Image (cartoon, rainbow, N blue to C red; front, side, top):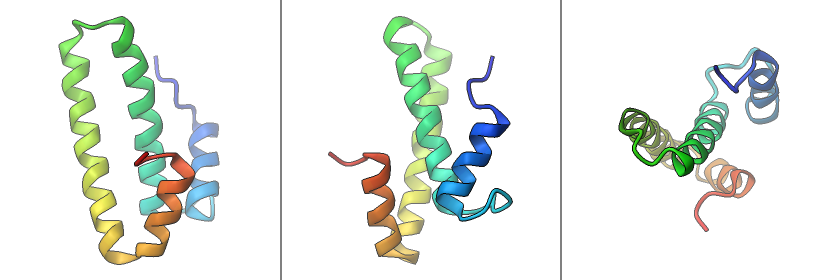
Length: 90
């Protein structure tokens, strides 16, 4: 069962992408990936031997890392504000 409803996705797109229809926004994609990563991390805390989910988590982390690298090159100020909003990079 997915924890990410269409209303929640629309809220992410509105907050980070500017409009609910701006689904291609890099910032919104990173925000959704971060939400999924946090959800899966909590699942893995209780299910330590779920290696299939662990692999999926690594794929999501890699995709988010690539998008963050792209955003760094494209718009550094937007990258910094996104990192601050999402609470990444302690």
